[in-house]
Amino acid sequence: MLTRAARGSRTSRLVTVVALRYARLWRARIEFDDRYGIFVCSGMRGGFGRGGTTLGGAYLTRGNTADRVIRHEAVHADQWGWHGAVFAPMYLWEEIRNPGARNRYEIAAGLEDGGYVAS
Image (cartoon, rainbow, N blue to C red):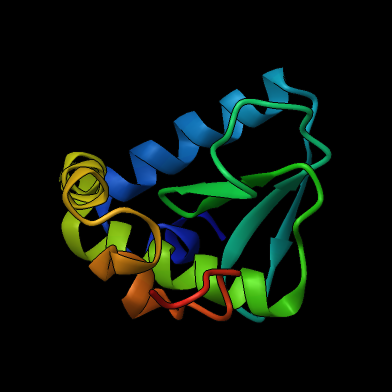
């Protein structure tokens, strides 16, 4: 499951392991969503951005676990797999330049699935 969630990327695998440990510290309920190949860490009271955050192959959230959201977050897991650990600064730089619905990584993941309103 870990290799699948990390999309076969070594650095994404490391990020996923760290994210799962972090989620445990926040007392998350961790389940593997076999449909999308991603760990869903729900029940967290904090420790993530917006409605949830994907780190490697782990999605961290309080309870934002609708099917469309998991599908959206699985695309972010794919992005982590393609880019590895450098995805974090790439995403942050894009978010600074083009926040929210203008962020190309959010557009690629599907704005509507992610709960964004196109601007």
